[in-house]
Image (cartoon, rainbow over all chains, first blue to last red; front, side):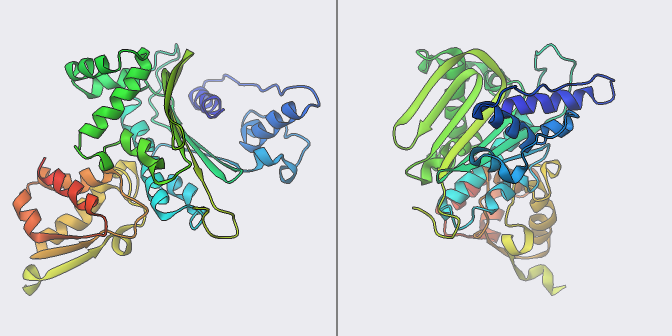
Length: 265
Length: 105
């Protein structure tokens, strides 16, 4: 969903001033699924931005699964990523809060510094804005945070950032994985080896290690056709999708304590 | 005049930000470049020894740390001079190791 919103947002920014318009047709029907889709689009301010009238349900009556979604976008680190976590202070353990803060800001910086180093090859005119998008959602005692960019993706950025022979050798280690999965795993190893300290890898490993401080966390990276996910409880899994995500999406899911104070860890 | 030889303490939370993040000034208001240029370098140029209190932030990513501290080497300070004159105070030993790693790559 975040990537869809990001693509629409990007397209809107690209079309600004060129006379093109975007229209929105909401799903018909009275079912709860259709209603939730309508509420999500309204909650994320997408209807207003597409000049669509708001839905009849008022936001305070939105479904519980929709009401706690928050959205942010930007082109700098500034205070937004930190503000996302601020409201959870006291409900997330200090160690996890620190790792999440670092992971979030490094994910945003990765987007700003590395994701837009070349054309996106998406058939659109060149558009050079280095933007990130973020979703947060709290449900069932878990905080979910997603950050994405619409850049060139990890498989394409690796050869730009690192020596090709190093990448070739490392990819051989992950030869049983698909091309894009191997690229993500290679990027994780390269970041870690760049400091020589497992606890303080650069960039991507700091994103990846954000959930280490919890017994019930999940972190995932999707880029190109590949995804790699690590769950505190079940370990790492990876796979390949049929179509490519033109960009990179990072997601975390971590436990939060009850809103009336105290962490659940 | 005596100040050139005096010691100085910088508390990153009190004097800079609780949410330091980013590499370059263009990344945001509390970047490593800004911390280096506006705090660390002026302090190093005007004081004999600097005590840097690093605890209390929400966390400092490698981008911030490399630019703030590794950038001192690129700006002409020697690793030996930095180790001798900059005292790092933190409860996190890995933070000190990382910063020293940027001085001795």
